[in-house]
Amino acid sequence: MSSLETRLLAAHAAGDTLAQVALYTEAADTAATQGAAGFFLTQAYIYALDLGHNDTAVLRTRLADMGRENRA
Amino acid sequence: MSDADLSAVRAPIQQARGLPNAHYNDDSVYAEEKQTLLYNQWAGLAVAADVPEPGDAVPVNFLNIPLLLIRDRKSEVRVFQNTCRHRGMILVDTPRKIEGAIRCPYHSWCYSTDGKLVSTPHVGGPGQNTHDGIDRALLGLVEVRSHIWRDVVWINLSGEAPEFEHAMADVISRWAEFDKPLHHGGANSRFQLELNCNWKLAVENYCESYHLPWVHPGLNSYSRLEDHYHIEQPGAFSGQGTWVYRQLTGEDGATFADFEDLSDKWDKAAEYIAVYPNVLFGVHRDHAFVILLHPNGPGQTSEHIHIYYSEAETDADLRARNTEQWKQVFAEDVFVVEGMQQGRNAPGFDGGRFSPVMDGPTHLFHDWVAEHVQRNRAHSRAAE
Image (cartoon, rainbow over all chains, first blue to last red):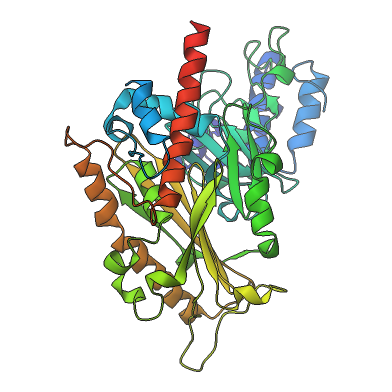
């Protein structure tokens, strides 16, 4: 399997928003720091919001729990 | 431009002159009219049929203002300025379905379909999506006042016009019988014409029947000039009617279904009304149409035509024939409105003289224009 970064770049190049939600979530889950996790979660959340993705609420709650987004 | 020129326009039709040339080809008068005749009034923007389902979004440039027509999640049709509250980026540049949120393509600020600002990614630094200085409640999309009547999405850009039902009370009342569900005929019942003329010339030509025998000779065989009557509502609308409307019939004698419960008058009557400023309507027992005029400068106008029926399902061939028939009629008018535009480059043209008998509806429109421009100039002088 190619690296996460490679897959993310490919998803961006293809405009594959659905993949971006999954890949940025994966990046957040494996991030080394809270700061990096917050960044990647934000990316995942925004693409989810764009799509009306089922994970939107969960991602928002995770960000809110970290003090990085308002609660719904 | 002096007020005296407009006083001549507002004289009784027997003495009146038409609007001066500058009202058709001068940039400053165009800007003045844009404000007073279009921003300050209820103007036709689009049709609700352009956004049939929740989430449908269509960018529309109107008077060079980027607007976004959208049907929100609750199925309400709304109009917003199509501009992100962050850096002023255009939000939607092509018609599409908003699945979740309207996401700005620049920094991804996101708006709900009812215009609320719902996310501001990284606004407080990487991964920090809130900041005390960013109050989302104050940064929703700028909504334009809108109202739907006869499927037309009317907008009042100034936000200061009277309530739509009040402003349009006379025409709503006149056509109360036609206050029935309208079904857009679909893709082959919409078309667009680009005209090299000022938008007002399209109104002026539309609302009079005087030109019919010369410009639309095909109508002479059954719809003669004497079969038409004027429709005149000062300050609101004008147009023409006919007593001899003949339904389109298929080879098997089929016709479009009638709108329900119309009075006998409409068995053969049809009416064509220009609702000031920029919406041209036609009603018949079995179909209706609307023409939305989009001014694109002093000498450029787009006509957006939509045809409607009383039922959702109509015969495709008959519908196509009807579209073709109207397309031909409207195309026949193009050389006239473009010719009048060219004619107004002659400095000696004084606005023209009206037929006291035949040009009443056109003069009413000129009078409406002149009245509003005069009033605007008086306000400007008072403000100074």
